[in-house]
Amino acid sequence: MRFFVGIDWATQAHAVCILDQTGRVQWQGSVPHAADGLAALLARLRRVRRRGPLRVALERPSGLLVDTLVEAGVEVVPIHPNALKASRPRYSAAGGKSDPGDAFILADLLRTDGHRFPALRPPSDDTRALRALVRGRDALVAQRVALANQLRALLERFWPGAAGIFADVDS
Image 1 (spheres, rainbow, N blue to C red):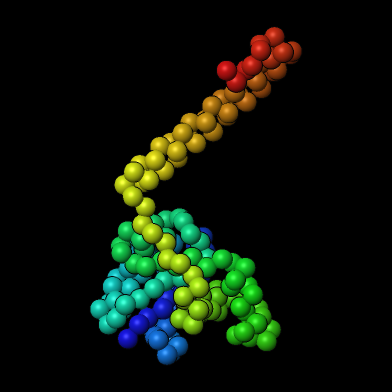
Image 2 (tube, rainbow, N blue to C red):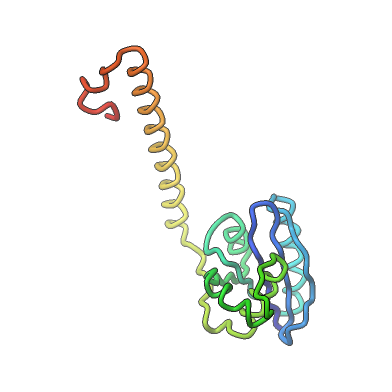
């Protein structure tokens, strides 16, 4: 038996729906966006995976949740939010949004139209290292901009026009 999981991502808690290959709901609930919530989700997915292969659909192609799933060997399939939005009327005449409903739609889209959506490939070690370097560089650039703004504000406060004397306060 194959299983299809839809996860509607949110900042506090993720709605999760697990369907079997016939479209029957095997489990529906939510997990907090915290270490213990993600650990509980992985434990549940491991139990399901013992019964058969599974795929997970989300609206996001990156982030902590996606990285956690990919690193655990779970096949993750990003589905664009516009595809989800366009599919809502297929499931409800009102077409309204709800987190549990979106988790169900994501799982069912994967079940019925999964061949249309490619799975994410785990990044190589080089790519992970490069991403870490870029994140570090981005943090340093943000810090430099903040310090330059602070310097400019102090100069203007105590010596109006001083910033004009220097070619570039940011250098």
